[in-house]
Amino acid sequence: MLPDDTLDETIEKPLTVDDIDAAVSKLPIEIDPPAKIGFEQLLQDRQVLSDDNTQLQNELMELKSKLATKQELDALIKPYAGKAYWFMCVYCGTVAMILVLAGFKTVLGNSFMLADSVLEFLVGSTATTVIGLVGMVLTGIFVGARK
Image (cartoon, rainbow, N blue to C red; front, side, top):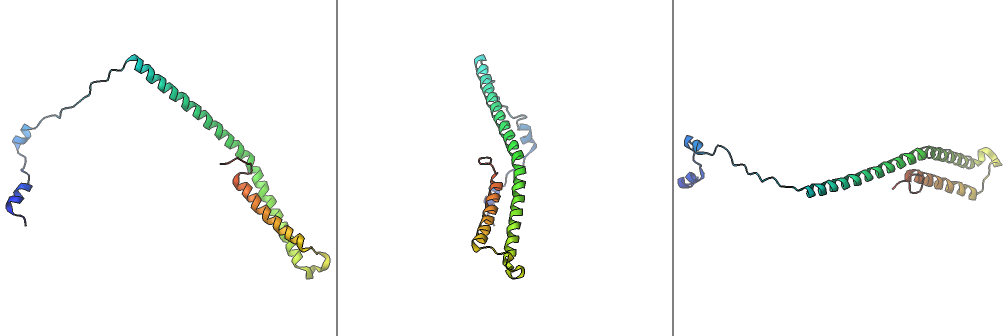
């Protein structure tokens, strides 16, 4: 426990009616005197605002132009992306069928014989087609179309 004299110092005295009567009724409000702005300063401020407005208008026109270009590129890319996808699917399916037929030599007899170099070319070209076309579609088909 604390000694009695330390306890008395830490406790504030309760407010009385006299304290309330002696209090200030309003806090003083400090107001800076209004700044005197001359006509020249108003003209300069107006010119700054006008320049800012012109700059913002130019930026807006540039952004609208970029948006229109992006929309036009999207419209051009969409059909080619779909056609490239279906070409890749048909090509890969055809190559898969050729590889399966080449694998069943005993069932078909000697009527469907392909050299190993032809089969290697088909497998390699399929991988190139898949990687190349998917890469082109993902990057936007046209060089520089997307950042």
